Structures are given as structure tokens and as C-alpha cells.
Length: 395
Image 1 (spheres, rainbow, N blue to C red):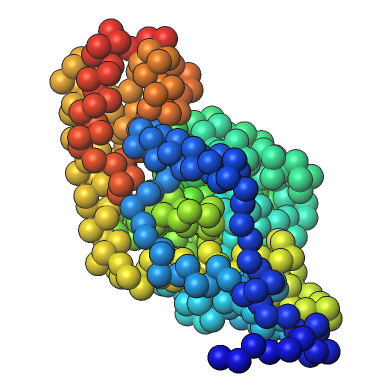
Image 2: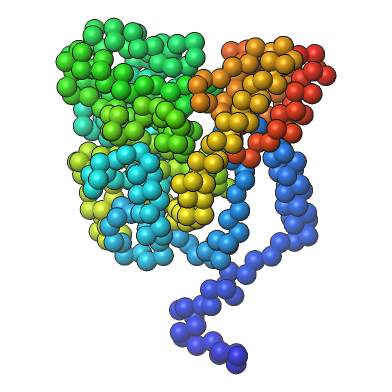
């Protein structure tokens, strides 16, 4: 191909590939190489946090050459055309079906993680019930308190049961005392340390018994939302069970190199807060302005590659590994346990050196492992061996 001369057009529209050429000095490249080596070593020993590593998105590498920006409502046209809205629409529609959202009466978008999705759900609740009080259990994720502070919402913490599930009698009594204020219920569908699932059908029956008609229920399904629909029986977590909004993580059970999530809500609630933005030529009903346009591509690629049956197989195998891990802990005398149909195994905190090596999340004298789809039985055996050599439980 003949070389083009640089004229007025070239100055206004530079060759994208040439202008984006970057290279590092040798010392900085070595720094990156060392970082990659460390990541590969640490990833082999990471079984304590809810992130899946068994993904391959290399087919999407060409799209990293574009600045994909999904600003605004994914279902509305926008002026900036370098977006992945069409893929985002398919992603949220897939999860809406899993969550049994009412047909043509739901809305959603791909977030940068479940904290944003939870913030969105609480924001909707506050806008719909400005005089409301938010109720959440003591086993809720630490970011819930942060989100409530951001939104300046009145809130009350409810006790948790030993398994991490909300104490429904405490909720009932607290609601009875504060019947003057409409409740905004924040339910955990997979709590941080114990993977406990609050029963929103039971919560709804408590609200009905107390004749509380103005209510809002948000479900934090960051961990379990990716597989709750495939459990038998499924937990009470979705729209048919009474949810008004749901936050699901993308980088947890499905897996992604970039944190992301999906938030779903009843469309009527969302329409109350949307507003037109002339600059982008669209309606913005989201939390952020610019949004990552690459993560919807990854979620789309994953769900199209795996399909419903592939996702089902992932949770079946994860549950099998969790059962194996629970038994292996018991075999060496540790009182391990897990909630029904949970992939999180809780056990007495092992010596600190073991916690550090295996990156075990620990609280209140207990640690856990989360048997995400990449976790193998061989890793469980290695962890058990380290605990035995270190002398069992205790710091």
C-alpha cells in the first residue's frame, strides 16, 4: 500500500493504530514481567474470595483498540456511537430471565460491581419512599453502611442468626415499633462470610402480617445471583418472590478480569428517576456517567459461550468441590460447615501463616473458602496439608 502524505485530513483524523503505538523502556517492561509472575503465583493460592479465574476472553482482544463507552440508558440511542449497548441489552435480558422479572416491566444495566448495584437499589428505594428506613442485617457487606451514608438514609441494623441469615423475629419486632416509616429492606442473597440467604418470601409475609403496604425490597445477590436460579430448590430471591431490585456480580461466579455487575429493577420504579441529557443525546437512569463498554462484551461472551446448561454445570461442580472440602476439614478434626446449597465452607481460623498464604478471609475467629468454578480438589488437599503441618486451628 502506498504511503499517504500528511495533509489537512490526516491532521484532523490521524491513523488510529499509528497514533496509539506505545512501547516501554526495558526496566518498565521487566517491572510488568515481575508483576505477571507474581499474579500467576498468587492466583494459584487464591481460594478465599468470591472470584472465578477460569475464563478466556482473548477472542475479545481486538475490541481493546476502541474506547467503548456506554454512557446513559443502555436501551436508548446516544450520540456517541462507540458503545456496546446492543450487547449490554442482551446481558441484562439474560439475567432478567434468570431472576423471573415481569415481562416488559423490568430495566437494568451493567455496573462496575455489586456495590454500585446495591447503591442503585437503595437509591430507588429512597426516591420512592423518601421517609423510609432501611433495614439490613449485621452480616451484610461492609459497603452497605457506606452506601447508606452516601444516600443519607435512615437505617437500622437487624440481628443475624448464627448461620448469617437475618433474624426475622428481630425484624418483625423492629418493624412493628417503627410502623410509622415505610421500610426499605436490604436482603442478602449470599452474605459475605457465610453465604447466608435471607428469605424474601418470609420477609414479605412479615410485612403483610403487619399490614405494611408501602415497602421496598432490594436483594444483594452479588455472589448467588449468578447461580441461584439453578439451585434445587432455589432460594427466595427473585422478582416473583417479591424483589423490587437485584444486584448481581459478573466477576464472581461467571468471572471477569475487570470487576463488573448487573443491576435489575422494576421499570416503573426506574421511570420515576430518569432524566434527559442533551450532551449524550440520551436518557441517563444510571449511577455513573461514562460506563465501561468492554465489560458487557465479556459478560455477553461468557453467557453465550456457556449457555444456561454450562452455568448449571458450573454450580453443580462447585457444590461438589464444596462438599469435598467440608468433609476434608472434618477429617482432620476441624468443625467445618456450610449453609444448604452453599459453595462457601466456614471453619475455625487456621494459623496466620496459612491464612496469609491462601488469602483466607477471616472474621470473628472463623475463616472461609469459596469453591468458585476454578477451585480444584488438589488445592483443597494442599490447604489441608498446610493446616495440619501448622498445627491445626488458631492464630
